[in-house]
Structures are given as structure tokens and as C-alpha cells.
Amino acid sequence: MDQEKLDLLAGWVREAKHIVFFGGAGVSTESGIPDFRSVDGLYHQHYAWPPEEILSHHFFLNHPEEFYRFYREKMLCPDAKPNPAHEKLARWEERGKLTAVITQNIDGLHQKAGSRHVCELHGSVLRNHCMKCRKAYGLDYILKTEGVPRCSCGGMIKPDVVLYEEGLDNDTIEDALHEIVRADLLIVGGTSLTVYPAAGFLSYYRGNRLVLINRDPTPRDDMAQLIIRDPIGKVLAQMPDA
Image (cartoon, rainbow, N blue to C red; front, side, top):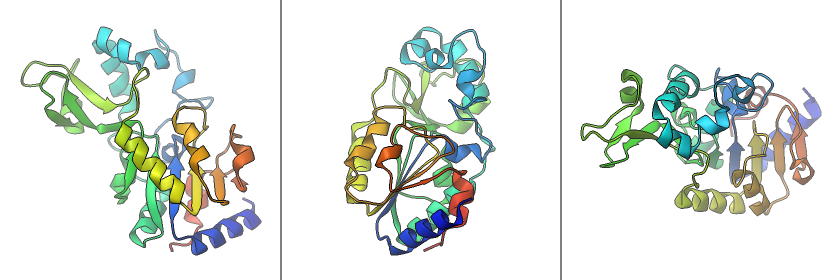
């Protein structure tokens, strides 16, 4: 790791009053959850349909059995534990340094680590609802069922995750943009910044301390004042707690 860059980031963290973290799949890979676009990610594995199609709204409605077979096998990781990145962010929030975590992940690990203000842009596997009566179900219910999970009313249960062809929740978008606009330090980690509209959120940042922590280049590298090419967990583990 580049110690000079780590020292610079540590200094910015100490000076900051409103840190906002924006993260993607790379934040959870250190917890054993596979990402999507890396060489060994989900998009490079072979199924009868591409993952993008399986995880689409129309596929869920037309082929719910195949959707849930893939979903249970590849999208649910109930035994995953928070890693140093999740834990550091939770400590920053506890100490009043960090105002929000904005995540594209659906695994709930930020909350498991103790974070309270989490903007889940793409929803969460921990929440599910009946498409007929709207009754809520937790992850445990999905894990206990086989095939297509059904509500007590007979309706099909859908995960509260944003599938392809579905829009993001407006309240979550407004919350995330509000936090980005007022941030004095925006740390972006573990995301390729290729999924829109989420990737476009960086354009709302008004400060001059944008940090990108990602192992590969991103389309937004030219916006950053600091770029670190190391795993997000290893980087944040070396940052001060407050």
C-alpha cells in the first residue's frame, strides 16, 4: 500500500465533520460474498440464462421457480459476517464523524456491523413482501421454504430488492443525495461506478475531497482528489477511529 496516500486519507478523516461513504459489491467481497463484474464474479459464471436476465422484473414474474433457484444459491449469504470496512464505518458513525452509508449492496452487513443511517439503493434480502396482501416476511422465512415462497394468503412473496427494469425508491434517492451534497469528505469504495443511476450520484458532491478506493480503474477516476488501489477493508482498517 502507498503509505503517503494512507496518511493523507487519515488526515482528511481526522479533519472531516460530515463523512459520507458510498460503496458497492467490493465492500462485501472481503466477507465472502461474490461480486458481479470481476473475472470470477456472478456475471462470468454459466447458467441457462445470463444473471442480468434472471435478476430482472420480467424473469421474476415469468419464471419464479428459476429465479428463486438462482437467488437462494447465489444471492443469499446468511452466514456472512461484517469485515473491517463495515466495522470502521459503524465506529465513525457512532463517534459522530460519518453521517451516512450509501450502499448498492443488499446483504445488510452494514446494519449487522452497527451502522444506523444506511441508504440501501438496491434494497435488502432481509426484507420480503407478499405481492398480493403486502404482508412482510424476513429472510428466515425465505430460507426455510423451497421453490417459490408463498404468503399465508396464497400470494407470491418477492424480495425487497431492486431488480433490473425496476426503479430505485424515491425516498432513498433523496436521502442519499441530501447526504452527498452536504458531505465534506466523500469516500467511494468497492464499486465499478458503472451502474446507473447510482453511479451518477457522485456528480452531486460539492466538496474537494473525493476519495476512490477500488482495485480497478473507474469511469469517475478523473473526479477524485485521491485514488487508492487496495481492498477497502484493508484501507479502512488503517484509518483512525475518529
